Length: 145
Image (cartoon, rainbow, N blue to C red; front, side):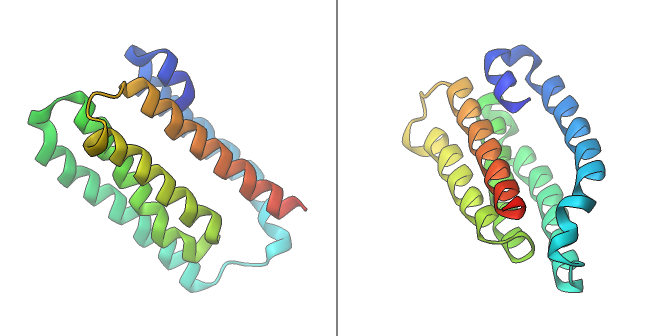
């Protein structure tokens, strides 16, 4: 849905919401069978996941309030950067692939915010979705092989 949002920028927020809902449903259905061979998660992994998500929610609120006056492009890229940041501690729970994904999504958002401030938001949004899709597929392949 993130990639679709690059093609339909006016529907971007709705597509993200639908994607989040679909991802939640698919995760609830598929996660038990995918995770079974890996064993039960440790308390530390569960705690890291919970803290990462909480950190993301808090940072998004702070960042949006701080950059709101700078316009939609800056808000969107700042949120994508925070999402990338929250992947970093999640590497402790999900492994190094999610850490690499975090670094790459931070670099993508940072490129748009600082290095190429005139770069098309839809292009950056597309690459963010592509990175997340590639990271998810890579993680699934690693688990299934």
